[in-house]
Length: 409
Image (cartoon, rainbow, N blue to C red; front, side):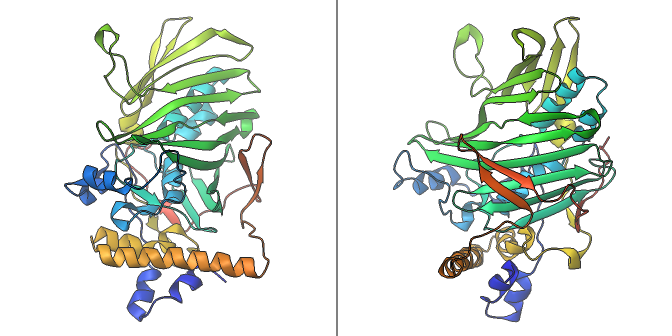
């Protein structure tokens, strides 16, 4: 039985059924974050704090149920996908076009930074239901014809798999990750387990890329920021990069403060970790520079305004081709209600989706069936991290596309 069949069987009228089948696509998170600003209530900070009054420090928040008033009108699958297919520049294609291994590694670092989108305090995407998918393609003007497919391959724990390939046959990206948010009394820290594996096929190079964690501070000043260390490793070239997303940048005389959006790092040979080739410094929401220590030359490695400053919203190109499990369909009625600020309808629709998914899981368990992902294989390695591998070598073009942007390159 398809996910959409399960959801529409629970609506009470033709109007509700039509709403449940709607494909709702909303603007991606960019530097401005305008979508959340439109939904933000005046007393947001106090309302967020009230959510955690009865939550014990150390609690796992992976399945914490948020009221619809705290939801962005999109699923976590869509947020992960947007970090790959929504960009003002063809950063993945640039990785494949790098003239040497050092330049290619630097381009991979720039792409990795581009997936860091501005987090928004007080808002979170929907927790994806098991089997939910998200399938989007870019046009040739944005990302070189990149096809991206995501699937929620596990619910407890939550694990999302992503597979992306380009039309030129030069790039293949596999991204398997599982967020692990925990409440620590004054903050929520969300570590992201799993890694991204980017293959540049023409150069026979594979890059393993980590992710920063997300810190949500409740006291003394509510805020969201990316933090932690990220490694980018290419075994074939022997090159490695280490990045640090800083919680605070030291100000004059060494006191804390400054800007929480700084990123610093370096590129070096893995066999000679003390010998730095390039230094990386800047702000992931502005510019990041790269300084070549051999020549002293400083160049712009990443420009956030060009990469994520003005992003196009995906559109439906082939409605009949949209899968019943597509995120924009599964949560369509909820998102529609949130955009209209009809919170009662949003909460009811959200409860239908979640209750139906729970009933589906119970019926499967009663029959003794084991869930099998449709597009990926799933396993857990010795260190406890999840590994996902696509069942197909390439991703087909999607019925949902990202229009070309005038700033694409």
